[in-house]
Structure formats: C-alpha cells, structure tokens
Amino acid sequence: MHAPAHTMVQPLKHRSLADFANMSEQDTSALLAFAGELQNALHAGMNGRALRGKNLALLCDTVDADGAALFQRAASGLGAQVAHLRPSLSRFSTAQEVQHTARVLGRLYDALDCVGMPPDLVHQIGVAAGVPVFEAISSSRHPTVRLADQLDGEEIDDRRCAVMQAVLLSALA
Image (cartoon, rainbow, N blue to C red; front, side, top):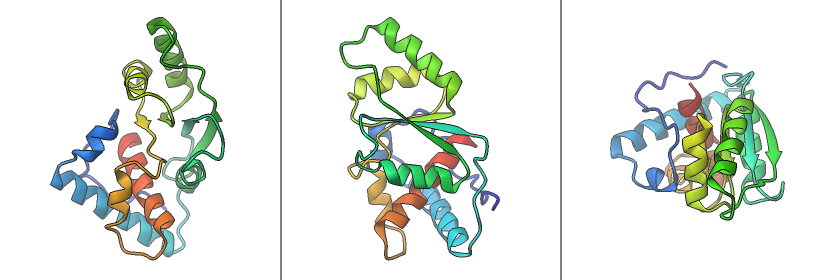
C-alpha cells in the first residue's frame, strides 16, 4: 500500500501532548480524514510499507507499558521497525547527558515515543534529537485517543492504530 495523499496535514514534527490537545480544527479534520483512509486501506487488505526502512524507538521502562503493543502494531503495520529502549535519562540527568543521548538517538532512529518521562525532559530530547519526538503517543491518556473516538469502527484499538499511523506518516513523510 502506498500512503494515501495527505497534503492537508501539516508536519507534526516535535509535537507534544499539549500541541495535540490544541490542534486546530482544520488539522484535526485533516488528520482524521487521513486516519480514515488508512483504516479503509487496512480493511481492503493492503499491506502497508510506507515506512519501510524507518526505525522507530519506544522509550519506556517495560514492554508491556500502556500502549506499547499498539505502537508496535501501528508502526510495523506501515513497514517500520520498532526498538524498545529503557530510558537512561531522568529529571536528574544533566543537560549535557540529555543532549548527547538525544543526538545519538536521533542518528539511530527516525522517530521516538517517550513514555513515562517528564514532559520537560521529552521536550529537551525533542530539541536535540533532530527527529520527531512524541510524548507518550501510545498512551491511553494521549489526546489522540479522543481523535480515535471520532472514527468509525467497532474496535477502539483499530481506531487508535489508524490515528497513530496517520500521525507517524505525517511526521515522517
């Protein structure tokens, strides 16, 4: 499957939890329309390969963290590889440690999802990494869950997966 056209969605690079919560109505509509297209493509049996060759990292303490499996499903459904990394950074890390680690992660991965990390630390990583950095986009508390509630379909996980895929494609395209 080739990614459906989604020219109306503005780049989402380095958006944080607050940014998603405050998306414009136009951006929200465009993202939902794109997620709907992805849902339809999945139901039509098309295999996604739009992110083939992309490497994503899920930074969280455990593999069974809230939404980790769903993030894996969304990314791999688009052809991306996902690595689970236990974060070595904390609110006690020095600015130099954060910057160095973020730069290394940015060279190794095309995008990062930081779960269970303080928002200011995620922001620092996002500034230094040079790749899209999400603040727990895989979490059931992320504002994108409200977007998934607006999509058609019975299974909430399928709708969340489609929204996450739309976000990933918009950020990495």
